[in-house]
Amino acid sequence: MGVTCVCQVPVAEGKSVQQTVDILHKKLEQLGAVKQGNFCVDCETYQSTVNAGGQPSKLLYVMHNSEFPLSCLALFEGGPCLVADTNFDVLMVKLKTHFQNAKGHKVECRGSRYRYCDFLIKVGTVTMSSSVRGISVEVEYCPCVVPGDCWNLMKEFMLSFLGNNVPELPTVFAAKPEGLFAPADSVDTMTQYLELFNKLRKLQITGSNVH
Image 1: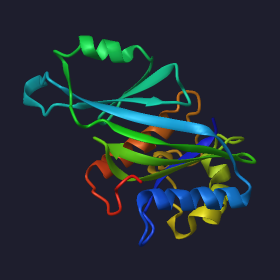
Image 2 (image 1 turned 120 degrees about the vertical axis):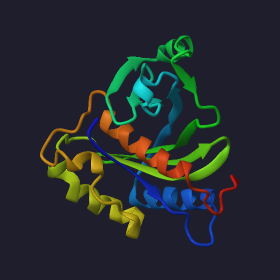
Image 3 (image 1 turned 60 degrees about the horizontal axis):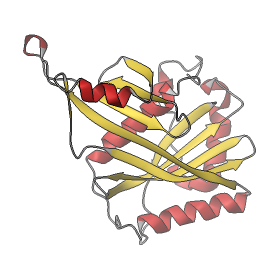
Image 4 (image 1 turned 180 degrees about the vertical axis):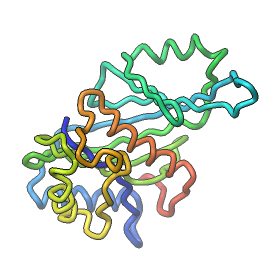
């Protein structure tokens, strides 16, 4: 896994979510990108039931990524994070006296996966309780693990199909502009998805019907 950027893409004016996704697929295919299956990223939210000294309860996010089918990621609000195997979900059920599942807060992102030269691109539709909340695009530059070395190249590539919607350098990299991306456990990628999910939880977008 190389340096990865996750961003939100707005729904095109006068178009539905699905039509906007189709436009992005067409642009990628015109560039020469080849579809390589599908992907899914999801996030379950748990709330701590034990408050120490009257402190507000902390949130725990348990996330899965189809790129890493044998593991999941548990991120505490404000840190730290834990990489575990997939039966961690079973453990969370057993810990229900300490962590309560926030029903109706599960967020899923599903879509198509494309390969173009050294880039891996995933265009997804983000849903919560079967309601469409937005469109995500993940771009990974596979050969490099140093954000500072490849960000300009990534921006140039994203410009070719995202136009004015090219994002700024993800905040997860800001603290380590010359540091290594965390490839082995996908923490940096999943942190970006979590930021996007939390943002989209609060939004209701137009053209949100799935066609």
